[in-house]
Length: 153
Ligand code: NI
Image 1 (tube, rainbow, N blue to C red):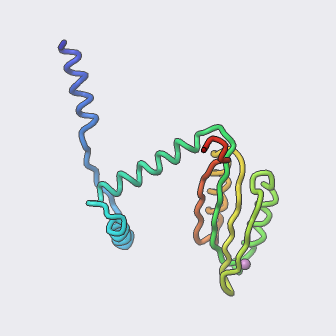
Image 2 (cartoon, rainbow, N blue to C red):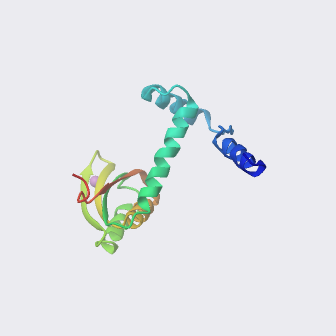
């Protein structure tokens, strides 16, 4: 093995070696993370964190796709927050070609749940969903990406 090859091999080994880094987190979030770890049966925080990172990277990769896809966006909000219901409805009308259906559930006197079906390119779906989740007063939102089903047997 030449000196150059040897050096290259060593560099590769270094890249594969585990690297440590510090993570700052408030105690409440850390407590919930530890509960999550216990529920899922991870052996330690590192393994759980690696899995979460991988999961997100896969999602990002998937969203780069150029095939028409579907997503369902679930949001929870308080309809008494000023102009929130109107803003959400205006947004849905403005993007009627991508937001193709909405189900509204009055959860209690104050809170509403809405499930929207979004259709379009993955990046477009993500960006519309992020916008809706980011609207002030939306308490929680989650997008589930799926496919048109044509490539799945
Ligand atoms: Ni409602």
